[in-house]
Length: 156
Ligand code: CUA
Image 1 (cartoon, rainbow, N blue to C red):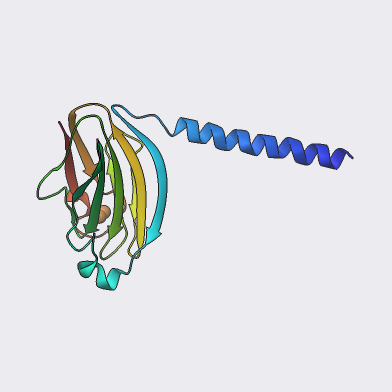
Image 2 (tube, rainbow, N blue to C red; image 1 turned 60 degrees about the vertical axis):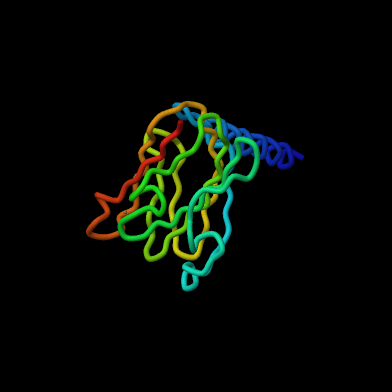
């Protein structure tokens, strides 16, 4: 029947839209976001968490790193008090959560951008193809210090 044809056509359209969005989301100067998933964490015991209790960078393979970031009013740990350092050409999976309220985690000028939500772990993977200094910004209003909540990623 025609109904089935229209159903099939609309499915093709939907898949096409998703493919277009996925393709469009891969652009960014010097870096490339290649994966986006997530998990959960208990904010009440964040300080005792094996990764988020002492967040930082971990080498997981040749040119591969895991970076754990805790956003809290009004810093990124790590990133604000000292820059996050990753080698040029590395593939970095960020695991981002928040300790208190909802924050944002945006690598300025790129499509690497997520919300940092208490209880949730945002995960995305980025390839750092070009050396340079990349800014990190909080892009969710999180309180009086929101506008000064920023950090740095140094790619060398
Ligand atoms: Cu943290 Cu705005």
